[in-house]
Image (cartoon, rainbow, N blue to C red; front, side, top):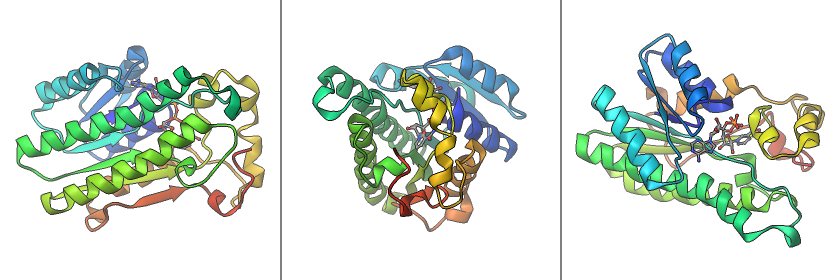
Length: 247
Ligand code: NAD
């Protein structure tokens, strides 16, 4: 199960997991994008159009997945939006709420649904949440996004505590800068255009690729990470060590 699988990091994870032999459910609010990704996967796959910030949307994608495959073993809770880049005094409450609804509430609903699946299936499982370098430190122009991404760590830690005795591992990947549609969708064209250039400030001197993030997700979901839970794995070219990358 990959949410936000129609684009960017989620699409890369869907491709990686499919190549690794998984049956994949590609979930996205953009149904055409989800269908296009699912249609190109080498293995069995189904696309579901759903808004993961609502209980109805989550029920719809879980229901579709169970109908198609009978059980769900792995969840990548990845869908997210950047939202407003307004300076703090200008952040509208509605914009704040919208980012929290998708990035944090959506992840909570997805985690809850995953744990209900594992309970009903009487199986263990693994969940990876897409956090961010913005989960771990400050920036002065992305308050709603940063708040939502910090909140994800609370979800991961709480769910990992609950999941530990039940055979369910919960981890996060924290990407740095990866050129994807998320920057264009913020409505700030200049920001999208400068993302790649900012790679020069990163210790590895480049931005990341979606496949590099998908590789970390596949590791955390897989048996090589059998003793890893409640962990946040940065994949940011070392960007966390410098303080200029988010500007
Ligand atoms: P993206 O815009 O390419 O992909 C996000 C996908 O999520 C889109 O297909 C979009 O339609 C979908 N989506 C948005 N809202 C949704 C909703 N309510 N219901 C269902 N689907 C929804 O961006 P991306 O960079 O691949 O982002 C994936 C995740 O990675 C996000 O959580 C983002 O915060 C995180 N992230 C990205 C970067 C980066 O530099 N690109 C860095 C850190 C974290």
